[in-house]
Image (cartoon, rainbow, N blue to C red; front, side, top):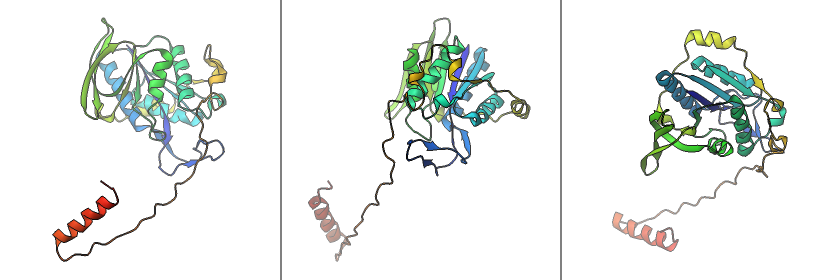
Amino acid sequence: MHAIVCIKQVPDTTEVKIDPERGTLIREGVPSIINPFDLYAIEEALLLREKFGGKVTVITMGPPQAEAALKEAYAMGADEVVLLSDRAFAGSDTWATAYTLAQAIAKLGEYDIILCGKQAIDGDTGQVGPGIACQLDLNQLTYIFKIEDIDFEAGTVTVERLLEEGREVVTTRLPALLTVVKDINQPRQPHLLRIRKAARLEVPAWRADDLPGVNRDLLGLDGSPTRVVRVFNPPPRGAKVDLVSADTPDEAAAILADKILAEKII
């Protein structure tokens, strides 16, 4: 079994600033972490490896400092890690990010399953995982709460999806891409020996030229079909307090009901 996990390094703070000209996040000087949802994807891949054997490859796209996230994934137990880092990738929207990651996954060769967190906490779009599946023409299953069964001989995976109205059990063909929710497992703490080994790890860094057949017109800011046109703070809402005076609670309730109906709130 070969499981590939796509992760993202995100700012470890809500005080994130936006470049008003480029419409992109300013990450300099902001501490970073592995996107929390991606930790569950890493853990699930490790659990699958423990059950079926094989290997786990973790991949991310970002600036050189994103190798810290890959070293953490390696310390958790990943077998291989790959960093996609090139100025050509800078400013990518979710579509260009999915395209770049898909090109790297294609270079990695055969795989059985791709795991992603359901969304990143900085962008909150939840689009990159499904975008990768579309680029690679894979079946995709989102909001996975539990992997019930994988039959490699039959080439199928059965999962339980966590939906707003309940749960759904679905089976699809392998290879497939799954996005997971936090309820799926509890990420492990890296072992001290793995942390020491990760500190000495030379993380492979792939540039655009290392991706066979990549279309440079589809990379980075220039290859992103979406744009942040303007960034601004919404104006504060005006508020008005109208006190209801009455001699009894029933009278106050009647007056309040009349006002609600008059304002067409309900």
